[in-house]
Image 1 (cartoon, one colour):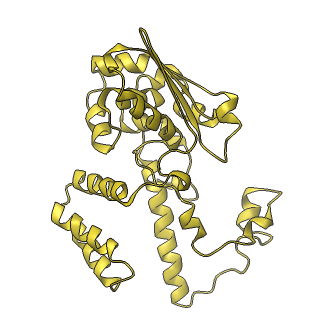
Image 2 (cartoon, helix red, strand yellow; image 1 turned 90 degrees about the vertical axis):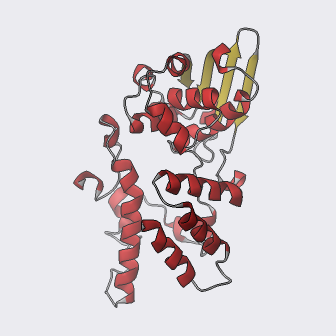
Image 3 (cartoon, rainbow, N blue to C red; image 1 turned 135 degrees about the vertical axis):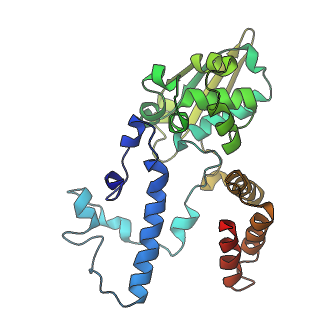
Length: 276
């Protein structure tokens, strides 16, 4: 795990390791620790971001200090996306389009699936294509466009339970057949929009029809925000899949709904109940 202490890397893709899910946990724990230290009077470095040996200098020889100007409190939260599907964000726009197409086509009749992603998305989730069509573990599935596409078309769902159920039977003929029909590429349509938007294009062909969708803003992006109902539904699926009792889950949701109207202790108390 020491390989993920300084900063996250993609080396976990080599063997389907669990580092990726640890990365945000480490960041969050460091934030809590920093806040606690500051509250206790710990003396920290001045100009930690823009200083001569600060964060920027550690990662680039030509930092853009203008990034620090005009930052509004809370802006980062409003600009943060929420992922509805438990896989690489590059694939989400494609999943949105395929779920929509899947309501119109019979997966058994799909002859080809073409998916257009930004170049870095292709490299991460579509290459080498032979390996991406043959995932061997859950992490492989999370970074496989062919798997996500086959899942969306065959099950009409790409939530956590759908991922887990399909991952437990990766040799299922229907799933294998669809994965083998998926091609992943990049075109000017997606490349020209990146990184401002992580757009995706999908084309599904059957024997007599062609279905196409282009998704500029995947669901969960600030421009296409999830409704409260979808966020709560994702929370329910995640924690109940982990074995948490439904009553404890609903207490947390109720406490979140009352933020700003009641004391924060209500939320902390409800969260403590998730651990049993």
